[in-house]
Length: 94
Image: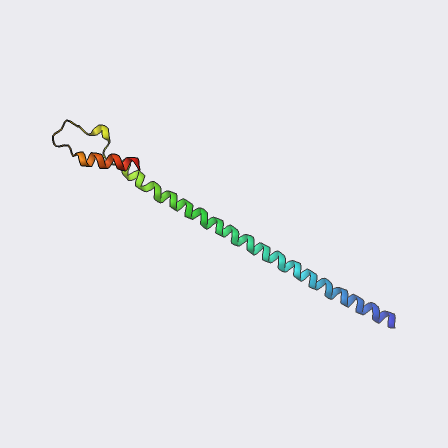
């Protein structure tokens, strides 16, 4: 009878030890999965910010492309606005 009790408590102790280690491994896996998810979310936000920054930098360039071209301006015209010509050429360099 004492051998049966020793065997029973040994199996109970082994089961408790297995349950503890299995629970720890599941917690570590869940923590790693959460960290990976958070990192992917951060990468997505960073990429969206980069895209928005590039888009905001491209919009002023498109508006200067709509300004009058240098080839359309007649320099011999007495009504030519040379200040506007200089400002538009400076803006096109930016």
